[in-house]
Length: 606
Image (cartoon, rainbow, N blue to C red; front, side, top):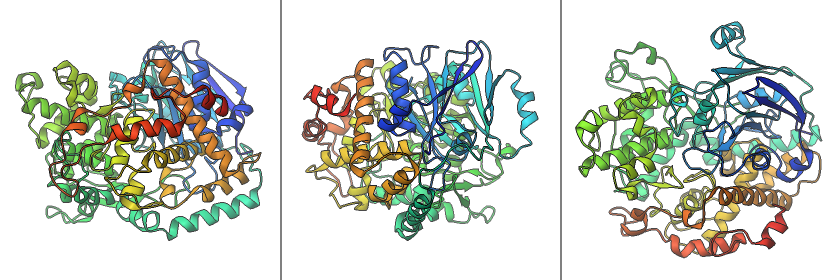
């Protein structure tokens, strides 16, 4: 019984907080977190709702392994309809906030309506209240170092469509604009302190202890989770992907970046000639994490970005791979200190560095083609313009000048200036740091992701680059639709359990299943868990179809389909999506138009 079996429903318009029991029949079908909150969401929200209207809902949710001794058991998710995409949005975050919410006795918090003025929710165990005098109230409680806060920054207030919700200073539910939805509701923050020792009970504590300890040993012994990620974080991938010829560069014009060495994990360890210190101070871990892939960095105090800003001279969250790529290679910038500062702003002001950096890259190409001018932007914006990238980060956070247009994302930006083909997006969400021409499976994963372009819905880099669980050649297409389906279903299980996806570099389902079985009441076989994952994926698909998306949205930009990679081992490659997508639909049990068949829906109960 790893669920608390309690749901907190907050009506922001009425200013009320009410408690209701968790729907345990749904928990048995959807497990928790991503799956369970999606079931609640699609049951209560019209798919045609305007994402920024009061009728949209916002759900904070934990999983049954959140707050337990399972390795990485600190995850929580935020589910809503995303303003960037118009699709289902589920954004996952680590840190300590999720565990604290569980310790307070809550599986889920559902926000309805919109507050007439800025407000935050304060949860102290089973007591919850909406507070309008936010500054005074936070001052009253901030003396408790274990009070955990998830909040929006200026980006969420300004309506940046990829605004994030940031907790524990530099962990974020970062993608799809969940922070913009929170801002539209006038909800500034959720602060929680949990001290309940009776919040939940494990079904079989002794078996859970053995299973979780065995899992931690597997993580420690694996080269990626035991060595690579602790030492270099996700930045271990920068030079690997670049040498492979799959690092999107200058808005995907190129697939290799000549400045990759200067912004990768190794560079973060190097001592600066200016002050003799390295960019990286140490690594950091989320609640219950034995991997500790997080980066804590300190900037060069003499760097142009912060020399007149002493508040940024201290250590804070450093760039990880996706952010370093988006702020760097995507727009041709190779200044690690500038990337670190821009990433600091993303954390402080609450916006997604992936969508921001990729949108800047698109703007730079529009500028290069003469479709944007210096007068329109306010300054020159060629590829590689470091100071311009930093300036745009500041303007976007404040919602000023050309930053307002950058805050709309690349799909809307490129459409406005007559070149929608230059938006490197799927369903309106910007690509992460892998080129779909260089890695065919990742291209398929982007095209079919339910929340728009995403690497964390089916991480085909594992087989295509790392050889996990089997080696698949980057340009091969055979077997990749079936492998992707398996990855997508497994990822839905991991996200719903309340643990981190990075465990799956080392763990298979056979490592995860015993932990879920020992924690949760009922019989959770591997077969049942995969069925749960498939059910979640199809439920999300059903919502998107009802929202107006179709199989035509399972596509990639023309550049990836028609313009061959120019350099590197993948030179000459284009995406072979047209070969893989029909097979993917078939293995999913969908029609050729990408619609789940009646037989599939009946089998899964969606």
